[in-house]
Length: 574
Image (cartoon, rainbow, N blue to C red; front, side):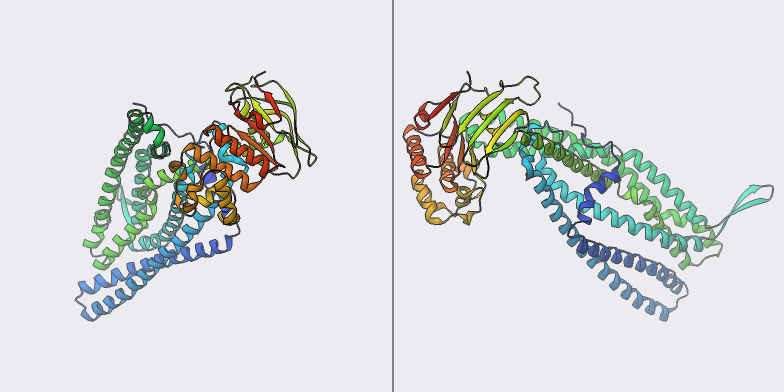
């Protein structure tokens, strides 16, 4: 069985630097004012909770001293004080969580929008697949990793601040209460160690943190691999759903079952490894916490039994020891979360790096584009095309002129570069050299061989990429009739996954309907009628000639049927 993949993210970079690179844009964005205000409120409430913990610690000594002395009036007074402290602690805790979640939600919204914009801008979502991306599953980065990054970054950072303040508050209490410890040195000499409980607690926590890191370090890579395998399995399921008809007609269920089981086997194997490492860490961390429950009593017992401290003092020392231990052991308690958080940071930074790579590719793709006068031609000057990862050019330098008003059919064998030429003309093919001159300020539309139909209403699919209400209903109804889609008139506002419902021929006719609705000045067609019968092809081309006489077509097709609707033919293969 294939072993889970190791992280390919930017582990080489400093973790905190990577974190700040991802977090900084939000905290200096247009939402910075409200973000810092909410963070200040959350931090203030966290500090208030630490103050209340200090008050509980003082209450512990007074309460158990009152119990030891059978002081009933003091007992009831202290019970009332406890109720007030508990009410305050509940109030602070509830609102701390409430405002923290508001901040998390706003941060996630801003970061998600930013990454969506960056992924969709400059065709990054398309160029991603041409870039031989080292970062997988961009959908998971945006949907899940952003959520986990925001939640864990805020929880960990505020939690760490909380523990630092707790440490500063309680270590002074522990130092004062524990007193000095006389350590015999022999020959009647001894060394007095002040605040010995604080030193003991420090040694206990440092040892626990070191051991926890040694045991839990492999969790970082395993968590990274778990996110990858989970995303790959989910993507496989989505692919099956999107291509259900092809799989069913090909009787491909057995092959799909084998593929999906293989993907899930990777999920299962990696999770088994995660469970084993987590079990090892849990053995240590649970044992560490259990020993810490009685450890302060064992260390402070000699002073209690020698009557140097009261029962209340013993409980106060134990409570202060627990608080200091928890603060110093913050990394021990949060190690699994830290390991997962680090994996998320690496994945998101990898996503950012890949977007930068696609921006460079987009720059190269646009470098071949230039402008010709309005009303002029589409002109190719020494344009050569290559494939990703190949040094040899796919085509010889092309010098062609496509004048306005003269539609041209491009024919040639499969794989000769016809569709690639259209991509270069549209500025999305970075593996090209030369020049493509396009008429200024004239609308262009590319009709791909496989039309895209977004999930939503049919009206939105027809108007795409414009808004659904951008086209009058009367115009849509007329175009449906023109494209032989009358049977869909009653379903315009029905929300469906139309690419799974409509046949390939119907999908192509929906794309043709878009052409009539958008009325482009230049229309680039890539096998636009490959799924249509000859009569429908004739109808659509004739409608294009009569309805959009100012539109110039540059078509790619294997069939000879469209030839009669073009004024020129260029054989790409010769």
